[in-house]
Amino acid sequence: MGVFVVGDVPVVAMESSEWVDSRGGALGGAETNRVHPVSIFRVPKTLSSFKPDAYMPLLMGLGPYHRFRPELYEMERYKLVAATKAKSEHFPTREFQELVDTLKEKEDEIRSCYHMYLDYDGNTLLWFMTIDGLFLLEFFHTCISKEDRLSSSWSRTPNLFESAGSKFADHSILHDVVMLENQIPIFLLGNIFDFLDIDKNVLLSMVTGFCSEVSPFKLIKKDLSLSEVYEHDHLLKLLYHLIVMDVKVPKEACPINMPSGAPCPEEETHPKVDSGSQVLCSLLKLLSHLNIRLVRKITKPINMIVSLPWAAAKSLPEVSRMATNLEEGLKSEFDVLGEDIKNPIVEEIMIPSVSALCKAGVEFCLSNGDISSIKFDKRKKKLYLPHLQLNVNSDVIVRNLVAFETSISDFLVLGRYTELMNGIIDTAEDAKLLKKKGIITYSLKTDAEVAQLFNGMTKSIRPSKVPYIDIAIEDVNKYYYGTRKVKVYMCMKKYVYGSWQILTFLAAVLVVLLMGMQSFCSVYSCPRFFNLSNDLGK
Image (cartoon, rainbow, N blue to C red; front, side, top):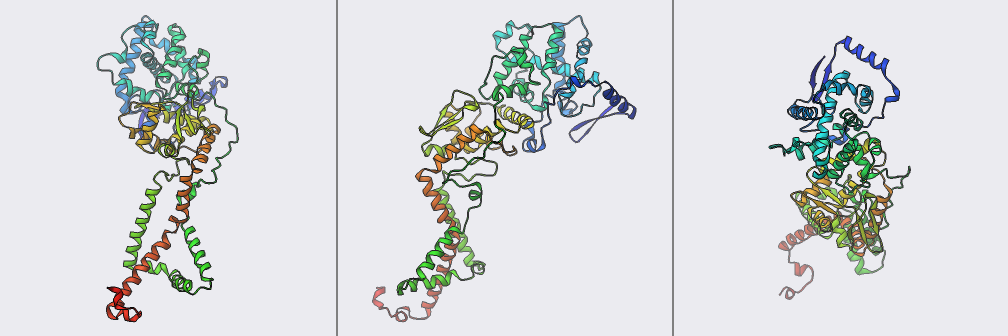
């Protein structure tokens, strides 16, 4: 058997006889009652292609997916140090192979947890899974409080990651430990504790302490029993459960109904440019039917102008230049007028930004609950949002939680929450306002990093409906688009800004006519031609 790399993927090469032996053994000895549902998935390309570093470990590979990546070999010695430390403390007189042998009956369960077929022989798989498990337990030991650590029977010697020169591991390894493709089964850790004859409450303290330490969200439940922990196949699944806690979502979630004054996404992305033109043409048509001599003198030349071939006229260099300048001027004016109303993109849900909502009278308040506490109080005009704590690893944690949710559920609760935050946080000012309200706390360098974090997070997440979040979005939109300021702006945008094309051409034709009159007057005497007195010019 040999290993070679195709692209970024390690491939194990086997002789034909080895292949038959391995497949025959698998088919002959598989026990279906030991097979677990797949829970450790490969992240789909639709997610990982936007930000690969958030899903692919950069320093530490745990489990089988990234085992043979050459760039991760440097950290293998840290795994061996952790395994050696555990052996010297807990089973110094026994061989390491004995620990590996105790896990043989779990081999089928371990394989069934992974979405990808694991083309390794049983002993190789169990060896590196055991070493990874011991390393992970040592890392969890650093995450529990110092008081619990001193009373812990896992280790009383200096921690591997607290030795001189190892402080880099605090964030760098955490970055990789929380990734979906780096998960290893929790029951494997439990079997290691059984072999070492250590109280499993220590394992319970480790995993729950780790979840409390790294979670950006408020955990629904912190006091878990060991049996509740074992119900979850891996650490990321446990963390997701503690955040979402099996939110009940109906099978058919109603789409958001936009309020009567709110624009639909299509109208915002592609505004109807002919609505103002239609109004103007209807007005001219009505005036033309009035039997008033003065009005006919005004509308007749205008109707002639409107009926001219504007496409051909715009092709003229001078007219095209003036039309372009006027068009840009009109657009800039309306951009100033509508600076509080953002134009949504495909990835964003239809909801105004924090700054725009604050100017419209909406107050942001910190809720005492979890994600399910999101709501909008229409009477008090208050939008309640849960607390969110961000640091350098929060982007990776949230992305991998959403990737796991995408793999197991049709209703993306965390995905919908990130869409909401992406919708309301557009700029650094939006992040700063939420920070002042205590809704977001972060150790990032700038407010702009928070906006960048959310603005790039939902570009590849499939849409989903979560009732309590959608109700809050709908109520906010109804209030916002029902305010007088927004109604006036939307009306002007529809009937004034929408008519910019005809206004551009009218202005261009007027300039051409004035230039023609100037040329005419340079040849003929304009006052005499129009029967005007020369005294009028004085």
